[in-house]
Amino acid sequence: MIRKIIEIDESKCNGCGACAEACHEGAIHMVNGKAKLLRDDYCDGLGDCLPECPTGAIRFVEREAAAYNEQAVMEHKKAMEVTGTQTAFSGLAQWPCQIRLAPVNAPYFQGANLLIAADCTAYACADMHQKFMRGKITLIGCPKLDGVDYSEKLTRIIADNEIQSVTVVRMEVPCCGGLEMAVKKALRGSGKLIPWQVVTISIDGQILD
Image 1 (tube, rainbow, N blue to C red):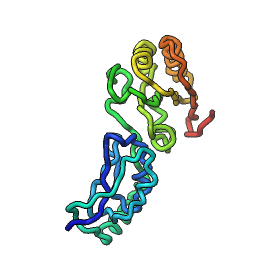
Image 2 (image 1 turned 90 degrees about the horizontal axis):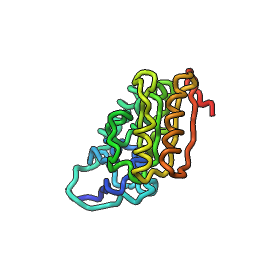
Image 3 (image 1 turned 180 degrees about the horizontal axis):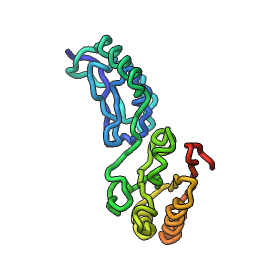
């Protein structure tokens, strides 16, 4: 049938996930850092997602689409409540995310807000994706386990790309100090004045600063 339904322009999507949270039917999900309409029959055509999109990536179109299936939506919601995934959306916007594996001149670094996080923070902080990763390009590492100085590669990433901001999320344990120091060294070495901050997570998942 021909009906009104949303269309998402992935080139405009910044991966914030606001539309996915606003979609009460679960029709929109984040896939590889981009919003996607996964089920036509879950979209009611009312457009609750449109005003939530900060980049204007969503619009209405009329096209051939499956009819809205309210029963399927209700069953989907029930399944999400049972599994506890009702509000779980990934904030990871790119791959790879390991500092050692990420290409220095990857296109996703241009204009990026950069998150540099210690591996363990994603396990200690329950809402890591929503609180820190959403809308950012995420790089992770552990200087103790990798046994390398990340500062040289991070310097190149910051110097060679139009990075807008840098956020470091580390654990309170001493070994995470190496990650923070590497970022500070990289910022100095890049020769750029970029807004940056450090957030420390306790071993029980609390944000300390």
